[in-house]
Length: 372
Image 1 (cartoon, rainbow, N blue to C red):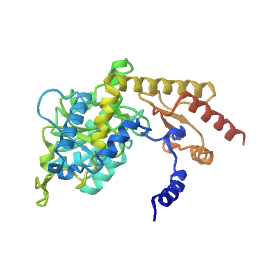
Image 2 (cartoon, rainbow, N blue to C red):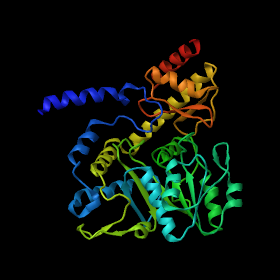
Image 3 (cartoon, rainbow, N blue to C red):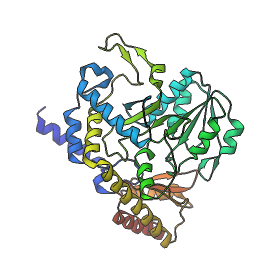
Image 4 (tube, rainbow, N blue to C red):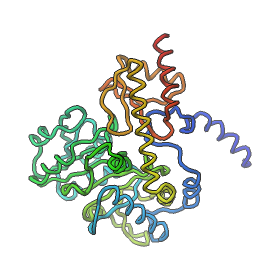
């Protein structure tokens, strides 16, 4: 088949998908990325750090990206390690895989911890103990009641449903009295919280400046403006030694991540995004997203809607009596929406493509739904 015909066929399928440039995807933690970042991704698409000895240049780029992520996670000095992985799911599984191999026997997490924690517990055959929440955050009193030596705790810096930050400093203090493994899932918050802190919105810590934190997940392919698949796992000490597998056919003869093949065009693209935006550029993005979040909160309240919780990050939840019906009706009107059935709320992630005009268009459609 000739190239023209192939393009014609694929164009039809492309037209069926939703696209971030249209501004109608409300529930995703991804957005459209700069052309230069896409260009670099394509240039390095052959790289596979699963066999890193073939790609020494891309390996150097991985170290540069990880070094930047260390800054986000407040890792100072020596003794920190990290790899770019496929995303938060792989990173969370790898962290808990290493914890199990260190001898930790249970996982403690809240119901709002990412679903990958339940996947990890299932895959690793580790009991998962649910810790109660207090207004969407881990309840430290319940944690203390349930915690035993030899447990792994998962705290979240930017929960997927509500965008809230667990009290990680308090959790860290509890850990100092126990032999436990503290993992922080900052897949979304890692590229948001450091800048919100500089901008004066928050004061919380989430990373390695909390002594008990052992591992941190941060995803460049979320607010880091990198293409899929680009997650990461950072660790205090080399936890990757605990999951290393012999792979004799590789030049290095070792594999130390969950996946064998690591699509590594995203590594080079992540570094190009870091160069393109810089620290100040990311701060501007976060500032604008947060301003749009607060604009959305104000407008929904003005129109009589109830906001579920005060947003700590660029995630807003609006209460609805019949949230599943609202979802169905909005999907009919071309919106990509996300809901939290347990909270009876619609969740909007204010990524850069979710602007104030998107808020107004959404409000107009919601009013039409109410009239119908």
